[in-house]
Length: 171
Image (tube, rainbow, N blue to C red):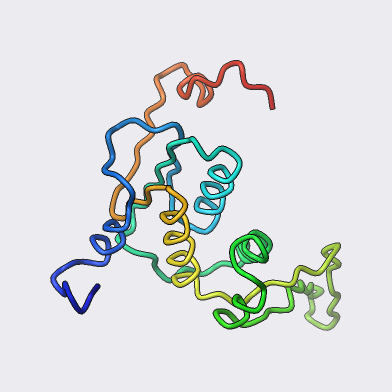
C-alpha cells in the first residue's frame, strides 16, 4: 500500500485497516496499543465477540522500546492461539528465558536467582510484534487507532471505578 500511496504517513496506513470510524461510543476502550493492551483487547474479543472494542495509541506507529516484561505474555498468548509455533519461529528468534544474577558488594561472588520456572519465549523486535498484534486485532474486528492520545477524566472525589461505572464490581 505504501508504494501505491507514498504520501500517507505510518499512522494513516495503520489506521486505514480499521473496521469503522470512531463514533464516540464503545463497550471497551483500551489506552495503549502495546503488546499487553493488544493482547488484552484480542482476548476480550475472543471471549465476548459482540463487544465493540477500540484501542488508542498516542504513537504514530509502533516504535522501538526497551524492556523485557512483555516478552513472556506475548509468547504465551500467541503460541498456538494466533499462529502455529513453527510460524512464530520463522518470524522471531527463540529465546531461552531470563536469568537474574546478584553480585555481592565487593563484586566477587555471583549468585543466580531462581525465578520459579523457565519461560520459553521469542526474541522480539517490539515494533514488529506490536505491528503484528495491531493487524491481528484489526482482523478480528477491533479498531486500533495510532496517533490518538487518550485522557481519562476522573471527577474530583471519585475513584477510577466510580468514573467508569464499576462501583458494583467485585474483584
